[in-house]
Amino acid sequence: MSVLVAMTVMHASCGGSKNIVVATRDADLLYYQKDYVGAFDKYSQIIEAYVSKKEPVPGDLYASAGKCLFYSQSESAAMNYFNIAESLGYGDEHIVTLEMKHYAEVGNDKKELEALEKYSALYPDGSEMGYVNYRLYMKYYKAGNFRKAHLRFQNMPDEYKDDIAVLEMQHDVCLHLGRADEAGQIARQLYNLNPNNLIGLSFVAEELYNAVEEKYAAAVKAYEAKKNTANYKAMKSKTAELVPEFRRAKEYYIHLYDLYKRPHDAAILSRICTRLNEKQNAAYYDKLSKK
Image 1 (cartoon, rainbow, N blue to C red):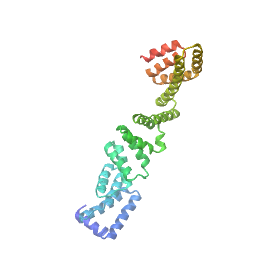
Image 2: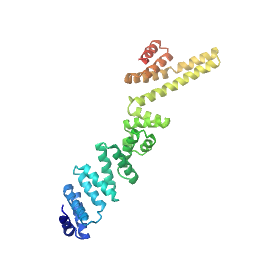
Image 3: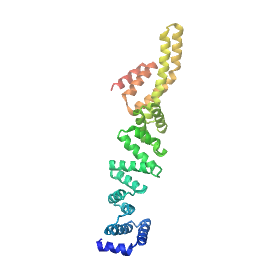
Image 4: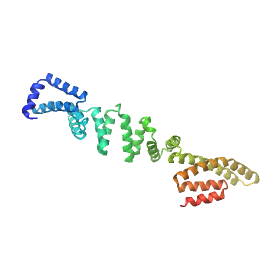
């Protein structure tokens, strides 16, 4: 628009402060009617009129014009207008939301992180905080910032916390932070959500095996401390009582090995079969453990 036209807009369409209000109201109406092209033209005319008069342009006008561009599929241009609005001291929850979602879509990790952290700092009670906590969790986990990731996980909505991929990451976070009890709770949750989940099934199997192996070791230790016929019979009785638990552990580890073919699981199966006096199976799994 030429300076002459811009002056005309200022004097005719927006000549006084009252006319500016009217022109802005007209632009706002077009925006709410979703005529984003028409609204952008109106906002642009008002902005150019301010510029032609060498008067400060209110930041909210750039923000409004930017929103029109965003919803007209001109997202990159919209970001420029939002930057100008913010440089003029204007900001609102809506434009930060559009910024963080745009940068996520185009894969600009740095800019998305900046927008997410800005939203979190400025609008902690905002309607998008659930999404923001989720995205920040993903960013912090990927960067290996496990403490920050753990804090974000605590504030995520259940819809994200019940996601198996998120739970697997949080299990890893807890292990890195030395939070073994929390890691165990998450592993059990993963097993309940999917009995074939590697983390969950491994946890349940290992928990059962370790418990029964500890009982077995205690029975043997009691006999080793004082070897006599009575204590030998007591040891044999106690270890015989453990057979059902060893068989249950064996079932879990067979399932694990069938699913994931890990040598580690085959090695444990070999030890379990030894406890059950299944020599052929023990040798079979020992061989598999060395592949």
